Image: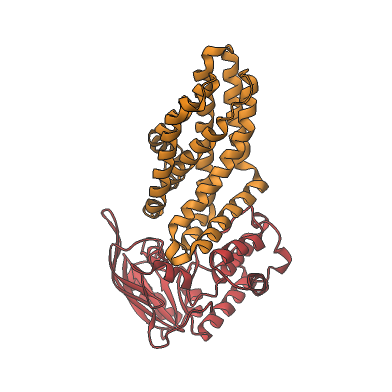
Length: 244
Length: 229
């Protein structure tokens, strides 16, 4: 894992009293959250609940207004670069360069992350996401689903111990979704930690080991996946006032 | 930056970004083509309005640098807009490197594009404005001014890309700050086109060099604050 050790006894992600404000608008209002190594936490919530902002804070893209955040044992304020080395991020957007090929995109990010044996790593990932035959095609010629698969490969290029996934299922077809589930399970088996957001209760609950519901910048519900999907829908409705 | 990465590691990251930008540009020719076309158009159109002669040196120099300035603004805006597409700027920001290296990589890419465009435009300018040969001082003036232009332009382009009216914001923010280097470039170019020697432009070269040093020192440090949402 690129020389990164997982501390089995610690939390992969620990968030205490996290607040993020944009002027008068409070996007996050005191979030407390923790994710253990090997956990897959799915966060649900309606638009504007603060899911993406939370992920951006964890990914070091946005600085918190207040609160303590640590990822992979590193403090967000002091060790942002160390955290970036240990996280793989998938967002709504692919973060890929349209005019470069799939290989060139992965090579670019691999070099930025100092990945050793980069050619082998790229070939392995491209095979994992089923894009061997399109590896030298420009990204713009790939379908939306293929681009999303490549985005997942990009996020895994440095074999990160923590995965932050914002609506990772966007644009994936059935085959790609199954492949993605395999990658997630494999990550959990290797004691990686995954925090993902999802609009789909069914899909998110199926992929995760724990669930949380966000509403109005707060965690309104958090628990292990003991609820069946019907009860989860009911809790979601109670927390958010929105029917899934 | 050098503490965490090491000098070689830092240089590798910067060159990786430059390589990526050049490769994209070779495929699309989106930035260089529009820059050359715009600068050529300005120079050709204005060349019809002016009578070539000794008194036009300063005006000709002004035209050359107006062409470079506005072509440069065009290129700077495009460079970061292309990064913004599909969130590539976020992709860069997620890389485990000091943000100053991202700045230096983008700045060097823009510098390379602008120097290539200037290498095409300057000979055309010399021919159209009927100057007596190629003044060698331009080989110092043009790169010196372009470094300062790219140094401050990269910073403001990154600042403007997160604003709604980025096409308007970019020149509004950038041109007043870049004014000293543009004025120095016009003045020194005007002098050498009039046949003046190195000694006559020394003070302007000093202004440009000082501008370059200041912005190359300050810009990487503030880039982190500029680029964050």
